[in-house]
Image (cartoon, rainbow, N blue to C red; front, side, top):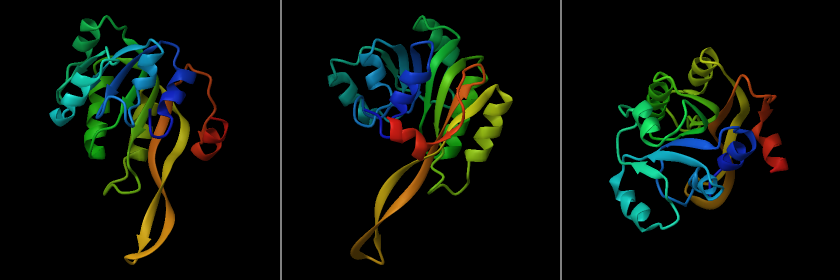
Amino acid sequence: MSQLKQDIFALNNAVNKTYIEIGASHPRKINNTFLLEQHGWKGFSIELDTNKKEYWDADTERKNKIYWDNAITFDYAEACNQNNLPNRIGYLSVDIEPPENTFAALKRVIEQGITFDCITFEHDRYQAKKNYDPIVKEYLREKGYKVAVDNVYRRRKKRIDGQKKKINKICYMETWFVNKDINFDIVEYKDWIVNK
């Protein structure tokens, strides 16, 4: 299941039940598309780290294709053709490291003429050297998308001065988007998550 309920966001807002997952990691743990595939969605995943391949090979429930390739140079249009997917995909999950690579992969797929109902983009604002959140928002606005869920975060516990005393730290990690033709009014994640 996904870490921040990205899969629920996709299930509720994608018209076309298809996906592209950039940065698949493990086939189930904190995975944004496992639940979608369980609901009959078609799509494909991309992962560069072949250390995860053994988990995918052993998983008998994951049937959709995974490419062990570089998301920044990948031919998304050809992969859509190979997998009989349309040029309008339901959900795009973009989550690789570091954020500049995530942005490069996002631009690569968009500039190959593929459009989406909804997109979740991990910018890791809480720890990144450069804040890609406003850059991605402007880029996607120009490409016909609007912010749907803003300031997506998770809470992390952090030691204070090496002591056992811990605090909850809010870590802003993602922004979620929908195509401008989808009826969705922007909402803060803290308000969105209450109803999920």
